[in-house]
Image (cartoon, rainbow, N blue to C red):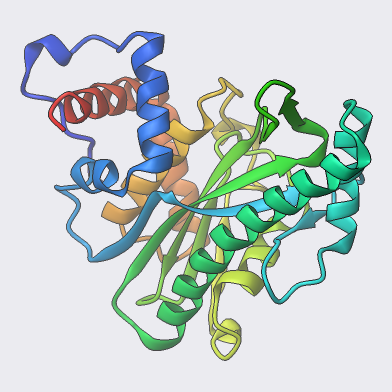
Length: 270
């Protein structure tokens, strides 16, 4: 098994403070370069990073939606407007804000899905890693002073697509199934329609409790840990994934500490 490298700088051996962990999370979400440097020792050819994002929106009934240009998203827009209006935003402004939010999500998803579908159709030697961001309309907020809208909370999963093995590896950091049938939803969305029948999905959503991790609000960091280790360790069956997760679970605290040390060391040298 690939092991996360220990930084050579002895000053980096301590677990970083919370402010630095926040910087690491933000860099994971927004910087492809940061991810590339974190994974410099990972051998397989891959594209993507934790900054490559697919956004899943949960409506008022917790039904998942993947907003994109080709989908009918009228209902999710109505849900967004309803929540904003309930937060005191005038109807006209709520509509404008909804259009801005939905348009941003569509743009992000269109770019991610185009890459994934193109590579799953045309290549057999690339691995794609991306962050699946799960957000709920119930958690949308608005800043009255700036009129900016954002989701005050969200949850991250990691998805690794192996075009060489025709499989998808989906890891939910807590091991709990937050979105029902998310594995099949992602298979339908990210794999080119002509190749879907060839792909298998391996996930940790239905494992026993021994490999479940408590929700420590570090889902982005855990997604990065799982993503890095999946890139370095070829997984071609559900049993291999189960064994892989059990191996990580047995040294969970050590894995987190080593990754944070490695990420902190990398961050200070960018």
